[in-house]
Length: 194
Image (cartoon, rainbow, N blue to C red; front, side):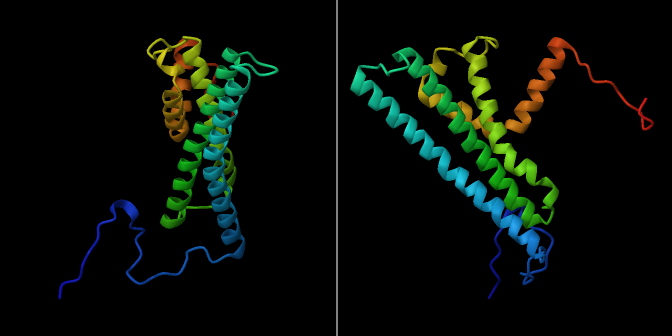
């Protein structure tokens, strides 16, 4: 009988069949990996829960006061909700990316504790970039995006999720655009610091 094979693409980490022990035998590393996994899972639960809370709040304000809250009129409430949607969807995209990066780095053996800051902060940066992206659309700073379409919740959610998911690349691209528009102040240093 022929042995069945399954192609899992790039999931091969170079181990021989049957080698199952973790490459991370140190208790401190295992604990940190668990904490990071729990953190990203919590973010994956919190972001959609926050979206539901925003949606419920927005609906209750509209139903109770005909679109008015004590502090905000209907337009301001809608604007604030759009930015909150962008924040939550960006956080969700960033958490998906961080979770994927975490399990790939563990599985392929290149996880190390020095990257903890990136893994913890990356989803938060993703949410900030997603909100800023919606601000840029609203300000019509970049006119290739349809401002009217960006008023729709599904467009905000989808855009913010994708920005969050690819925030590292998005930040790099925005940096390139800023350098092209405003120039760069970065000075090149040699190994002697001159």
